[in-house]
Amino acid sequence: MDTAGTQTPGLQTPGPQTPGIVITGVSGRMGRMLVREVLASDACQLVGALERPGHDWVGRDLGAALGGADLGVTVSDDPIATIARAQAVIDFTSPAATVGFAELTAQARAVHVIGTTGLSADDLRAIAAAARHAPIIRAGNMSLGVNLLVGLTRRVAAALGTDWDIEIVEAHHRMKVDAPSGTALMLGEAAAEGRGVTLDAVRTPAREGVTGARAAGSIGFSAIRGGDVVGEHDVIFAADGERVVLRHLATDRAIFARGALRAALWGQDKGPGEYDMADVLGL
Image (cartoon, rainbow, N blue to C red; front, side, top):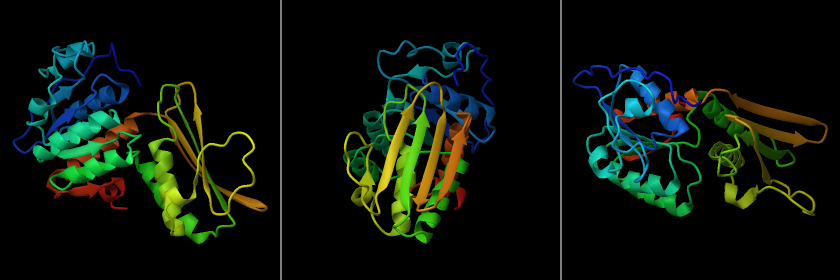
Protein backbone atom coordinates (compact mmCIF):
# COMPACT_ATOMS: atom_id res chain seq x y z
CA MET A 1 0.00 0.00 0.00
CA ASP A 2 1.53 3.29 -1.13
CA THR A 3 0.71 6.25 1.11
CA ALA A 4 2.55 8.89 -0.89
CA GLY A 5 0.41 11.97 -1.41
CA THR A 6 -1.88 11.19 1.52
CA GLN A 7 -2.21 13.22 4.67
CA THR A 8 -0.05 11.84 7.49
CA PRO A 9 -1.27 12.06 11.11
CA GLY A 10 0.57 14.45 13.38
CA LEU A 11 2.91 13.51 16.20
CA GLN A 12 1.45 12.80 19.61
CA THR A 13 2.66 14.34 22.84
CA PRO A 14 4.39 11.36 24.48
CA GLY A 15 4.34 10.54 28.15
CA PRO A 16 7.58 10.25 30.10
CA GLN A 17 7.78 6.45 29.64
CA THR A 18 6.77 6.37 25.98
CA PRO A 19 9.41 4.45 23.98
CA GLY A 20 10.97 6.19 21.00
CA ILE A 21 10.83 4.30 17.70
CA VAL A 22 13.23 4.60 14.75
CA ILE A 23 12.11 3.28 11.37
CA THR A 24 14.66 2.25 8.76
CA GLY A 25 14.05 2.32 5.00
CA VAL A 26 11.33 4.84 5.68
CA SER A 27 10.50 5.61 2.04
CA GLY A 28 9.64 2.01 1.16
CA ARG A 29 6.19 0.47 1.24
CA MET A 30 6.68 -1.09 4.64
CA GLY A 31 8.50 1.97 5.94
CA ARG A 32 5.57 4.22 5.08
CA MET A 33 3.11 1.80 6.62
CA LEU A 34 5.18 1.62 9.80
CA VAL A 35 5.24 5.40 10.04
CA ARG A 36 1.46 5.51 9.93
CA GLU A 37 1.11 2.79 12.58
CA VAL A 38 3.58 4.46 14.95
CA LEU A 39 1.97 7.88 14.53
CA ALA A 40 -1.47 6.41 15.15
CA SER A 41 -0.36 4.79 18.43
CA ASP A 42 -0.40 6.53 21.79
CA ALA A 43 1.96 3.88 23.21
CA CYS A 44 5.10 5.15 21.47
CA GLN A 45 6.62 8.09 19.60
CA LEU A 46 8.50 8.39 16.34
CA VAL A 47 11.99 9.73 17.09
CA GLY A 48 13.89 8.92 13.90
CA ALA A 49 13.63 7.96 10.24
CA LEU A 50 16.50 6.47 8.24
CA GLU A 51 17.21 6.24 4.53
CA ARG A 52 20.26 5.28 2.51
CA PRO A 53 22.84 7.97 1.68
CA GLY A 54 21.95 9.87 -1.49
CA HIS A 55 18.20 9.28 -1.20
CA ASP A 56 16.26 12.41 -2.05
CA TRP A 57 14.31 12.26 1.22
CA VAL A 58 17.46 12.72 3.31
CA GLY A 59 17.43 16.11 5.05
CA ARG A 60 13.71 16.63 4.50
CA ASP A 61 10.98 16.62 7.13
CA LEU A 62 9.37 13.17 7.04
CA GLY A 63 5.83 14.51 6.94
CA ALA A 64 6.60 16.73 3.96
CA ALA A 65 8.36 13.84 2.19
CA LEU A 66 5.20 11.78 2.63
CA GLY A 67 3.11 14.57 1.13
CA GLY A 68 1.58 15.86 4.37
CA ALA A 69 2.27 18.34 7.15
CA ASP A 70 5.66 18.60 8.85
CA LEU A 71 6.19 16.12 11.68
CA GLY A 72 9.34 17.52 13.23
CA VAL A 73 11.28 14.37 12.28
CA THR A 74 14.04 14.82 9.71
CA VAL A 75 14.93 11.89 7.48
CA SER A 76 18.57 11.01 8.15
CA ASP A 77 21.29 8.91 6.55
CA ASP A 78 23.25 8.77 9.84
CA PRO A 79 22.27 5.53 11.61
CA ILE A 80 24.73 6.04 14.49
CA ALA A 81 23.21 9.31 15.70
CA THR A 82 19.63 8.28 14.91
CA ILE A 83 19.67 4.87 16.59
CA ALA A 84 21.44 6.29 19.65
CA ARG A 85 18.20 8.01 20.72
CA ALA A 86 15.92 4.99 20.10
CA GLN A 87 14.34 2.51 22.48
CA ALA A 88 13.36 0.38 19.49
CA VAL A 89 14.33 0.11 15.83
CA ILE A 90 11.91 -1.43 13.32
CA ASP A 91 13.75 -2.70 10.29
CA PHE A 92 12.40 -4.07 7.00
CA THR A 93 15.36 -3.37 4.71
CA SER A 94 18.08 -5.53 3.13
CA PRO A 95 20.31 -8.19 4.71
CA ALA A 96 23.48 -6.07 4.56
CA ALA A 97 21.74 -3.04 6.04
CA THR A 98 20.04 -5.10 8.75
CA VAL A 99 23.34 -6.59 9.94
CA GLY A 100 24.79 -3.10 10.31
CA PHE A 101 21.71 -1.84 12.12
CA ALA A 102 21.84 -4.85 14.47
CA GLU A 103 25.30 -3.89 15.69
CA LEU A 104 24.33 -0.24 16.25
CA THR A 105 21.03 -1.14 17.93
CA ALA A 106 22.83 -3.54 20.28
CA GLN A 107 25.26 -0.76 21.20
CA ALA A 108 22.26 1.46 22.02
CA ARG A 109 20.72 -1.40 24.08
CA ALA A 110 17.52 -0.90 22.11
CA VAL A 111 15.03 -3.47 20.85
CA HIS A 112 15.66 -4.44 17.22
CA VAL A 113 12.60 -5.73 15.36
CA ILE A 114 13.72 -7.40 12.12
CA GLY A 115 11.31 -8.16 9.30
CA THR A 116 14.06 -8.36 6.68
CA THR A 117 14.11 -11.61 4.70
CA GLY A 118 16.78 -13.29 2.58
CA LEU A 119 19.31 -13.39 5.45
CA SER A 120 22.28 -15.72 4.95
CA ALA A 121 23.84 -17.99 7.55
CA ASP A 122 26.59 -15.40 8.06
CA ASP A 123 23.98 -12.68 8.51
CA LEU A 124 22.20 -14.76 11.14
CA ARG A 125 25.44 -15.35 13.01
CA ALA A 126 26.09 -11.61 13.11
CA ILE A 127 22.57 -10.98 14.37
CA ALA A 128 22.99 -13.66 17.04
CA ALA A 129 26.17 -11.91 18.20
CA ALA A 130 24.31 -8.61 18.49
CA ALA A 131 21.53 -10.32 20.45
CA ARG A 132 23.98 -11.04 23.25
CA HIS A 133 23.75 -7.34 24.14
CA ALA A 134 20.11 -6.41 23.41
CA PRO A 135 16.78 -8.03 22.52
CA ILE A 136 16.28 -8.87 18.85
CA ILE A 137 12.86 -9.97 17.62
CA ARG A 138 13.10 -11.49 14.15
CA ALA A 139 10.39 -13.08 12.04
CA GLY A 140 9.92 -13.74 8.36
CA ASN A 141 6.33 -12.63 8.91
CA MET A 142 4.92 -10.46 11.68
CA SER A 143 1.23 -11.29 11.33
CA LEU A 144 -0.78 -13.12 14.00
CA GLY A 145 -2.44 -15.38 11.44
CA VAL A 146 0.82 -16.52 9.89
CA ASN A 147 2.34 -17.33 13.26
CA LEU A 148 -0.72 -19.40 14.13
CA LEU A 149 -0.24 -21.17 10.78
CA VAL A 150 3.38 -21.91 11.71
CA GLY A 151 2.21 -23.61 14.92
CA LEU A 152 -0.44 -25.61 13.08
CA THR A 153 2.09 -26.70 10.46
CA ARG A 154 4.44 -28.01 13.14
CA ARG A 155 1.62 -29.99 14.81
CA VAL A 156 0.21 -31.46 11.59
CA ALA A 157 3.70 -32.47 10.40
CA ALA A 158 4.30 -34.22 13.72
CA ALA A 159 0.99 -36.05 13.50
CA LEU A 160 1.38 -37.30 9.91
CA GLY A 161 4.05 -39.72 8.76
CA THR A 162 6.62 -39.28 6.01
CA ASP A 163 4.25 -40.99 3.56
CA TRP A 164 2.56 -37.57 3.51
CA ASP A 165 4.44 -35.27 1.12
CA ILE A 166 4.79 -31.61 2.14
CA GLU A 167 4.74 -28.76 -0.38
CA ILE A 168 4.86 -25.06 0.49
CA VAL A 169 3.51 -22.73 -2.17
CA GLU A 170 3.81 -18.96 -1.80
CA ALA A 171 2.76 -15.98 -3.91
CA HIS A 172 3.91 -12.35 -3.67
CA HIS A 173 3.93 -9.14 -5.69
CA ARG A 174 6.16 -8.72 -8.73
CA MET A 175 8.67 -6.50 -6.89
CA LYS A 176 9.71 -9.06 -4.26
CA VAL A 177 13.37 -9.91 -4.79
CA ASP A 178 13.89 -13.09 -2.73
CA ALA A 179 12.41 -16.56 -3.09
CA PRO A 180 11.20 -18.55 -1.34
CA SER A 181 9.75 -15.97 1.01
CA GLY A 182 10.85 -15.69 4.62
CA THR A 183 7.40 -16.87 5.62
CA ALA A 184 7.67 -19.95 3.40
CA LEU A 185 10.97 -20.81 5.05
CA MET A 186 9.40 -20.33 8.49
CA LEU A 187 6.70 -22.81 7.50
CA GLY A 188 9.27 -25.24 6.12
CA GLU A 189 11.29 -25.05 9.32
CA ALA A 190 8.13 -25.68 11.36
CA ALA A 191 7.27 -28.73 9.27
CA ALA A 192 10.81 -30.06 9.61
CA GLU A 193 10.76 -29.50 13.38
CA GLY A 194 7.48 -31.38 13.58
CA ARG A 195 9.20 -34.34 11.95
CA GLY A 196 12.31 -34.06 14.07
CA VAL A 197 14.66 -33.15 11.21
CA THR A 198 16.39 -30.03 9.94
CA LEU A 199 15.02 -28.20 6.92
CA ASP A 200 18.44 -28.21 5.24
CA ALA A 201 18.40 -32.02 5.28
CA VAL A 202 15.02 -32.38 3.52
CA ARG A 203 14.48 -29.19 1.54
CA THR A 204 13.73 -29.44 -2.18
CA PRO A 205 13.91 -26.11 -4.03
CA ALA A 206 11.82 -25.21 -7.08
CA ARG A 207 11.83 -28.00 -9.67
CA GLU A 208 12.64 -27.80 -13.36
CA GLY A 209 13.40 -30.38 -16.00
CA VAL A 210 13.60 -34.13 -15.39
CA THR A 211 13.86 -34.25 -11.61
CA GLY A 212 13.06 -37.90 -10.98
CA ALA A 213 10.64 -39.16 -8.37
CA ARG A 214 10.10 -37.24 -5.20
CA ALA A 215 12.32 -38.25 -2.26
CA ALA A 216 10.40 -39.58 0.73
CA GLY A 217 10.19 -37.08 3.57
CA SER A 218 11.25 -34.10 1.44
CA ILE A 219 9.72 -30.62 1.84
CA GLY A 220 9.20 -28.82 -1.46
CA PHE A 221 8.88 -25.11 -2.25
CA SER A 222 7.25 -23.19 -5.09
CA ALA A 223 7.19 -19.40 -5.55
CA ILE A 224 4.80 -17.27 -7.60
CA ARG A 225 5.51 -13.61 -8.39
CA GLY A 226 3.03 -11.23 -9.98
CA GLY A 227 0.81 -8.19 -9.66
CA ASP A 228 0.36 -6.61 -6.25
CA VAL A 229 -0.16 -9.81 -4.22
CA VAL A 230 0.58 -8.96 -0.57
CA GLY A 231 1.21 -12.54 0.49
CA GLU A 232 -0.36 -15.99 0.12
CA HIS A 233 0.97 -19.18 1.68
CA ASP A 234 -0.28 -22.76 1.38
CA VAL A 235 1.14 -25.75 3.22
CA ILE A 236 -0.01 -28.88 1.39
CA PHE A 237 0.15 -32.31 3.05
CA ALA A 238 -0.52 -34.85 0.30
CA ALA A 239 -0.95 -38.60 0.66
CA ASP A 240 -2.53 -41.27 -1.52
CA GLY A 241 -6.22 -40.46 -1.73
CA GLU A 242 -6.28 -37.30 0.40
CA ARG A 243 -4.75 -33.88 1.04
CA VAL A 244 -4.71 -31.44 3.94
CA VAL A 245 -4.16 -27.79 2.98
CA LEU A 246 -3.36 -25.06 5.50
CA ARG A 247 -3.65 -21.54 4.04
CA HIS A 248 -3.06 -17.93 4.99
CA LEU A 249 -3.98 -14.97 2.77
CA ALA A 250 -2.76 -11.45 3.52
CA THR A 251 -4.69 -8.65 1.82
CA ASP A 252 -3.33 -5.61 3.67
CA ARG A 253 0.34 -4.91 4.44
CA ALA A 254 -0.78 -3.11 7.60
CA ILE A 255 -0.97 -6.46 9.40
CA PHE A 256 2.82 -6.72 9.23
CA ALA A 257 3.33 -3.18 10.48
CA ARG A 258 0.93 -3.71 13.40
CA GLY A 259 2.71 -6.92 14.35
CA ALA A 260 6.14 -5.26 14.18
CA LEU A 261 5.01 -2.39 16.40
CA ARG A 262 3.50 -4.86 18.87
CA ALA A 263 6.87 -6.64 18.94
CA ALA A 264 8.76 -3.38 19.55
CA LEU A 265 6.56 -2.56 22.53
CA TRP A 266 6.63 -6.13 23.89
CA GLY A 267 10.43 -6.12 23.86
CA GLN A 268 10.84 -3.07 26.07
CA ASP A 269 11.26 -5.02 29.30
CA LYS A 270 13.06 -8.03 27.81
CA GLY A 271 16.69 -8.93 28.32
CA PRO A 272 19.24 -9.60 25.58
CA GLY A 273 18.49 -12.55 23.34
CA GLU A 274 16.80 -13.70 20.17
CA TYR A 275 13.02 -13.79 20.13
CA ASP A 276 10.34 -14.37 17.51
CA MET A 277 6.65 -13.59 17.08
CA ALA A 278 5.64 -16.78 18.85
CA ASP A 279 7.28 -15.27 21.95
CA VAL A 280 5.56 -11.93 21.40
CA LEU A 281 2.16 -13.56 20.98
CA GLY A 282 2.64 -16.08 23.79
CA LEU A 283 2.06 -19.04 21.48
